Length: 70
Image: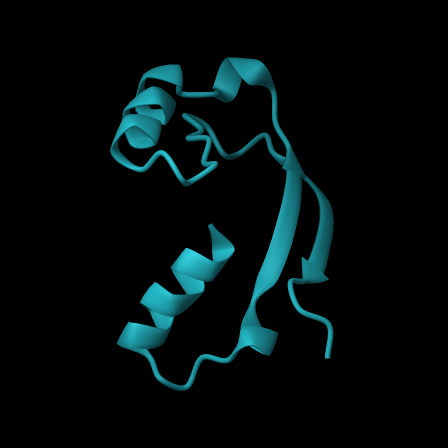
């Protein structure tokens, strides 16, 4: 999925490079998951592993790391 997002972003902004990509790992309560939107998004884009949250104010950032190491 990140490759897909990278190439789409690259079409919009040619200055973006692979070393500009970051992964952010979060922890969220399952009560904040928007199951309807998550299923809808998955049905439209089955290759994307995306979860939609109703409330993002209660997330905890676990890790931030570069997607590609320099």
